[in-house]
Amino acid sequence: MAAHGDLVHDVAGAALAWVCDNRSGFVLPADVLEPHTDVNHTLKPLGELAQLCTTVRRRTRPGDRLHTVAGSLVRFAWEQTGAGELLLDLLRAEPFATYPFEIYAAFAGDGLRHQGFERLAGTIAATRGWAFTEQHANRRLGLLNSERRIGLPLHTDMDPALRRTWLGGLPEPWTFERASGYALTHAVFHVTDWGTAPDRMPHDVAGYLGAWLPAWIDGCFEGGQWDLGCELLAVGACLPAPPPAALLETCWPVIAAVQDPAGAVPETGLPPHDGEGRDGPAGEPPRTFLNCYHSTLVTAFAAALTLARIHPAAGNQDPDRNQHPDRFPALDMAGRRDGGAL
Image (cartoon, rainbow, N blue to C red; front, side, top):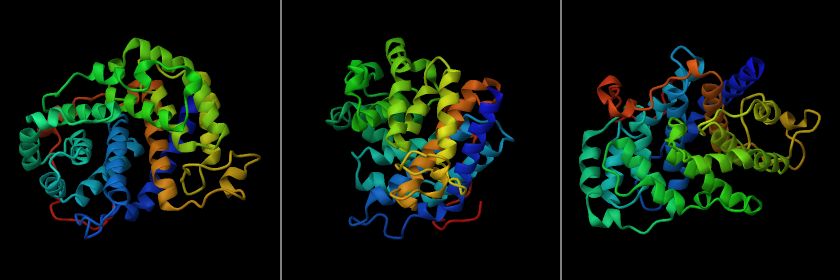
C-alpha cells in the first residue's frame, strides 16, 4: 500500500506542477464581464482551479508539497477575482445565476471571504424566486452545497434532491454512460462537500457505488476516458469506506502511464501500450491547455482524496474551516488580475 501511495503522490505532484507552469491559461481577460465573453473559457476554468485546489489543500497536511502548491494556486485564483470583487459584480449583474455562488463557495471553503458578496447573497437566497428556480436535481445539489459552504440556510434538504438524480435512483448499472457518469460524480462531490465529508453519503448509495465503480472505471480506461475515469476514482475516495487496495493497484499505474513528463493528463486519448501513452501515440488529441487543464486538475484532486483515505493521519482533517474565516484571513490581493509568481 505504501508503494502505491508513493505513486499516487508522485502523480499528484506532477499534475500540480503542470498546472503551475500553465497558470497563465487561467488568467481572466480584461473583458471578462462583457456579454460576449464565454464563461466556459474564462470563469469556469478559474472556478474549477479554485474548487479542486481548495480540496487538495484541505486533504493534505501542512508541509506537504501538494498542500503548499495547492494553497498558492488558490491564492492565485483569488487574485484573479480581485479578492472577490469580480464575483460581487457578477452577482449584481445576474442575481439568480448559480455560478457566481458556486465559484465563491469554492473560495469560502478555504476561508477566503468577501463581506459584500455575502450580504447580497444572503438577500437573494432569502427570496421565493431563489427557492423555486427550476433546476436539474444535480444543479440543485451544487447550489445547496454552495449555500452550506457560504453559511446560508439551505433552501431545501439535500436528500430529496439527491434522490431525484440519476445516481439517487440506483439505476441499472449497464445504463451508465458518459453523461450519467459526470452527473453521478458531481452528485457525490456536492453531497460530500468535495470529498471532505464522506459520511454524508447515504449507505444505500455508497453501497451501490462501491459495487459498480470498478467496472465503470475499467470501461472508462479501456475507452481512454481519462477525465471521467479520474472523477470516478475521486468518487471512490469520497465514500464512507476507503477505496479498496485492488482499485489502487489497478488504476493508478494506468494514470501514471498516461501522464506525460510535464505532468499533463489528457481528457481523452488512446490507452497506453508499451509506454506509448507518454509519447503521444498517433491519433491522440493534442495536449493543449483546454484539452488537459481539467483532467490534470481532476487527477491531482483524485490523488489527494485517495492519499487522505489510505493515510488518514496525513490528511488535513478540517472540513469546517469555512465556518471559521477568522482563522484563515483573506490575503491582501485586491485589484490584481495578472498571473503573479507563486
